[in-house]
Image 1: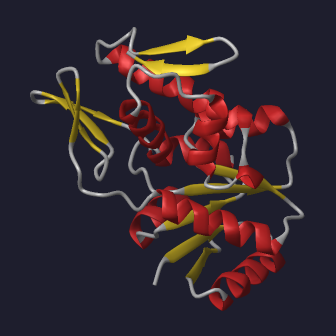
Image 2: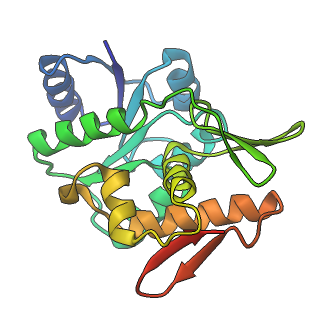
Length: 220
């Protein structure tokens, strides 16, 4: 049974989410004491976190940034904020999805299911130039050096690698990333591509991903 941890300061919403998740077959837990939330998340070892932006003591986006230093576990931001800036910022800090309140319970459950499906990696190890690509661990390695990618970054890299030297359209990437056209998010793709490029550049592969305007991306 997958364990989902709810980080939400509104007691009524916490109760609602716990009931929704439990009825759908998940083990639902919630944080109620907002002292050392990061430590509580790591100790709980959940399979996914539903994280509100507006939580006591620490902004949810700052918490997400700190969480990403420790783990790549799936995180969905659940928030009343509707600003595009907040969405882009959340994605840049490592959120895997973003949904606003009031949310449609069915849509939230579908997004959770889609996210878990995307994270079911095979153990196949591939290569790119002189890198070993391990999708299961989300790691690119070169000798003793390792580069950790988030789940979404690895999915994008995998798809580009599978079609290396071919143009992959934004639509194809978003469909693969979000599993269903209903969940396509253009901002999220742009942020994830930018983060992936920056990581590859830091590893010595500045020219790895080329943008073809109005067509898509190509892994060289």
